[in-house]
Image 1 (cartoon, one colour):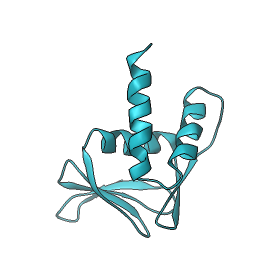
Image 2 (cartoon, rainbow, N blue to C red):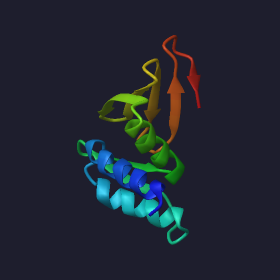
Image 3 (cartoon, one colour):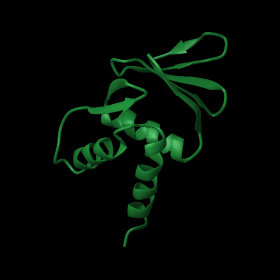
Length: 107
């Protein structure tokens, strides 16, 4: 069995700490990755919903699993600390951007 399958399952299981609909979002990503589905992925947390591009979804769950993304909060934005120094922010419309401590924004 391919080692990537084990990592994918571990990442999927870790995503339950991030999203209320972690299984549904993970299945949608799997289908997208294998060209069986198109479109964005709806994720839900703390009664908020975010529509994420599948590549952004993958970035969020993988960096969280690898412990590069920490201090996740889910209010009107999905926000976390990337590498402990950079704010990683996703707005409700799914747009992601990075914000440095000195208010420099990279989109």
